[in-house]
Image 1 (cartoon, rainbow, N blue to C red):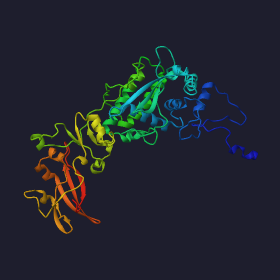
Image 2 (cartoon, rainbow, N blue to C red):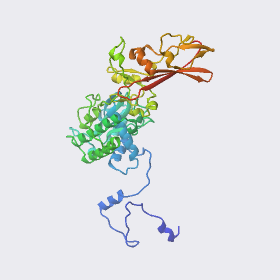
Image 3 (cartoon, rainbow, N blue to C red):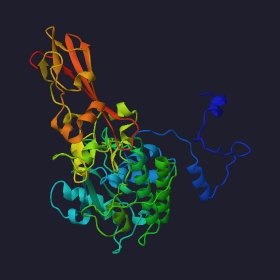
Image 4 (cartoon, helix red, strand yellow):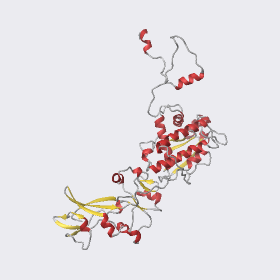
Length: 452
């Protein structure tokens, strides 16, 4: 390199804002310790956008989340906070989603005494390198380091993370499988839950997180005001993302996570999830005649329809389709069994499979059913080997328990459709729903076969 080119190459990192040098080359400027700190914070450097796993500490993952909360310019902050919010959403909404959250106490001091080739040595390593307690959200009554006693969190038996004295929770680095109904746990790790939640769920989660923030700041066992305030600020940003700043009164469930202790405050707050509110159902069948004149098997409870085709038919996302109270089509994972698990004592759940038979049955001849309204609802003449046939409605007995013949006359239509190699009958039921202007259509096609 020529001496004349040396000025073209920077010897020191860039800063933002740019710091001016001396008046002339070779003149050194003295700086005090505070100024050096300001220079360090203003350095501009290229950063990785993926997860960092090379910190020389077995606590590296928990420390990364701590740094992501504390420092807005931390290299992988955005990705780490998404994981944190996803894990917190899981802890806050587990009861609403009908899954089971449990905690298991881990005392590093107890495990350090285990004489084996794995648990004991690893526990001793964790114990000797535990983070200092000065940044912890809380202090313990016995003065011990909060990092020496943690709680493993399991959802449906799957580890999702552990309690963190600095950030409430440290999410698991890998999730072996997606948690039912919680699609933000897909792809092996947590992500932001916002787009997977319906409006009532987003509000419930936002109110629960706001409750966490308020209670943490007022906790009698508060330790680090800086860490707590910064965490509250981070949660506030996510709350705004969830609801646009719309606040509400937090509804906290009386159900508690098993094995979480009554102290410290952080664990008390994590132990009680959000309690789902009540939203108008978009899937409750409107039963009129059978409510006035019920049959023996007519359900007395509300009847809720669960159809995987609802997002396509209604033109809205599964997370926005409220089935009953706080349960959405997304949150129950499109599963009849999951909705029954949550509210089976309050409602009866049906699917299109509960309404339609597997095959259609045919009678020889045209108009074989006397005094029936069916011919008026049939478009086209079904034929088998060139001979006219009359279809029987391919509906299960359950339909009779829900609707009268007059209601079926208004709701039912049959249409002959030509397909490659034959024909089929398409049956459509227009099902009235409580509070909805338009009925909900469910359809099933039945190939016409000689054996029917």
